[in-house]
Length: 130
Image (cartoon, rainbow, N blue to C red; front, side, top):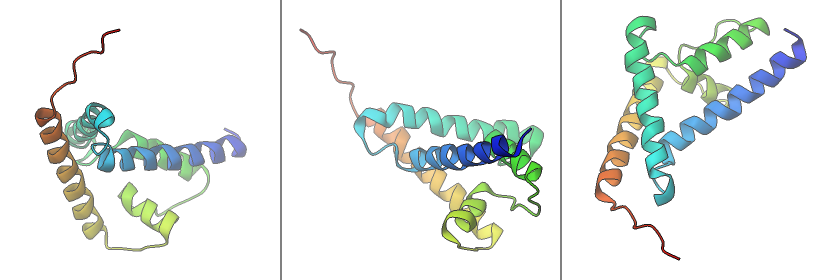
């Protein structure tokens, strides 16, 4: 794979994965995105826990694919957590891996609880009639 394609893939994964994380954490706020947010959170939980049974708890295919791209670009010693990677790469913040894992899991769990609650509590709007 060419260097330009690898750099483009690296940028794609940073943007897409960051957007996925932000939507997971905040997508429950706008009423119109609550259902999609719940789906994204359930897919994430299925990956972390379901695929995690085979690949290790917390497994994320996006992280796995991005790590493959970064290794092809020559990067080594990548953190075990994508959240930790983003904190270092985007914000220059270095935190203990255990702390990052705890904050990631707690934030995702809180977002899931809020999303489920709002999706149950918020009544569906009747379809508009012309």
